[in-house]
Image (cartoon, rainbow, N blue to C red; front, top):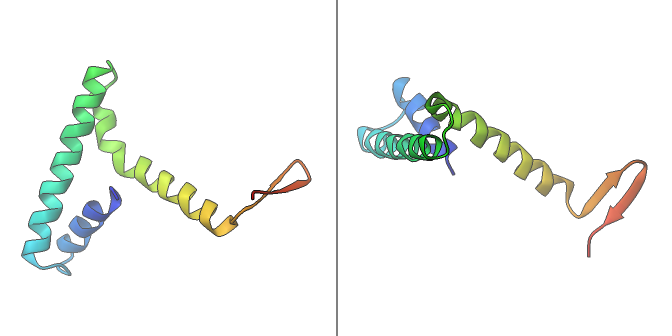
Length: 84
């Protein structure tokens, strides 16, 4: 989960996280930023998009959570479908 290290960094800045966790969160966040930087440079996109990775992870988390909450039933254009 890409949001956890960023969340730990925020909590650490507020003084709610031990130094060992801050070290883990920093290393993890830097590794993720470097990864996305390499991806964006490789595909020829603006490397500043790298800084938006927490927003993308948050949107993906929202999609996953709503799918789990919704369950197997989907409503589309007034029709209800249930997956088996």
